[in-house]
Length: 144
Image 1 (cartoon, helix red, strand yellow):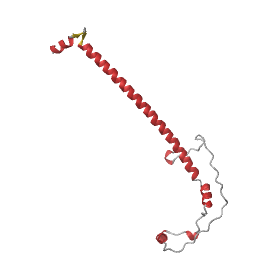
Image 2 (cartoon, rainbow, N blue to C red; image 1 turned 90 degrees about the vertical axis):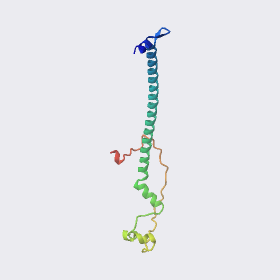
Image 3 (cartoon, one colour; image 1 turned 90 degrees about the horizontal axis):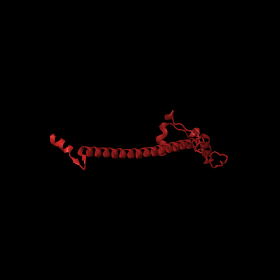
Image 4 (cartoon, rainbow, N blue to C red; image 1 turned 30 degrees about the horizontal axis):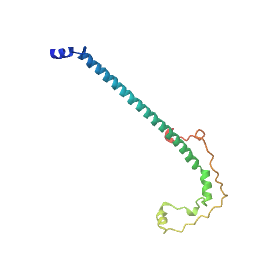
């Protein structure tokens, strides 16, 4: 034990070993704090970038939901179906589940074909450009 104490009491250039060891430890702590702060700053900027991407994705999801709602409007779908000659299903075209196998194989009873329904021509005007702020907010069932 006295050997260690005598080693610590020795001086190099007028400075004891304990003071040198303490200075090295303080320098190591300052360096480690600097490295930790730099790493925290990098992580903070990375988190901010990811949050920005999440916000952009959320905005795209809202815009896409609004677009789906617009495309699925019954009036629009009806106009498009009439434009290609589709009409309501007639009574003769209906069948029950017992007849599905025969209909799939083509062996079933003859089903009357629906006559094309004449419809007025639909002018497909371009959609007006709607700014993101003006687009309707679509809320999913899970968000309620």
